[in-house]
Length: 273
Figure 1: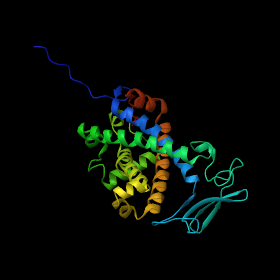
Figure 2 (figure 1 turned 180 degrees about the vertical axis):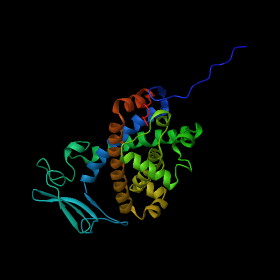
Figure 3 (figure 1 turned 30 degrees about the vertical axis):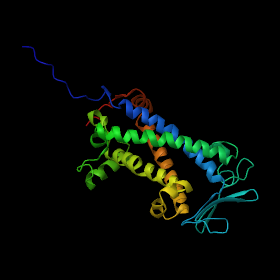
Figure 4 (figure 1 turned 90 degrees about the horizontal axis):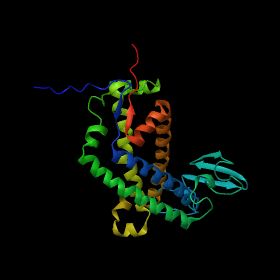
């Protein structure tokens, strides 16, 4: 009787299937949606470049964050601290806008157009995101691939992973096929924390939604607080994207891109003892 050949454990240098199709599709659709939402959101912010806490906010109120200009001198004010930002924020390219046209959609001042871009791509973020949640739990992708284990969450394990990243000592061989604990924590925080808070705080800024769901105003402490939280979450998301791209470059951009485009990933070879 013939016996089935045993499947060996992949080793460094092997090409393995790492990213499934729904993950890859959602990643790129989400990337497009987030980029457009950030850029159109900056144009919306340009209409009133001040942030407040509480229910109300207007020109006579004192903002906790303000981007503006005095003549041709741009500035960023956070609480009592004022920083000069000429040619970056407040006044750039000969225009007095909080954020320059290079990073906004539309590139010229257009509040109505920015809102249309923002709302359309918000749906492209929310609907596929909910479907990804359903698929992630139903297929056990969340439980199996994203949820950290108790051993990974132990302080010693977390500290060792932080030290390895600081030394650019990334996982190799079979271990590189799975997300490390820092990746898991960051992905879970963004997918199930940062993005939902952004969506709900954005909804809280809509008078129509507030009329239907007034509890959102209580959750976020008022419409202006929701706007501030929305802006802070956007800034944190930008920080996550920057760190994510840096890690991709340091870990090997061609191999990482092949993984998220085709699903196939070549395991890095094990380090010699």
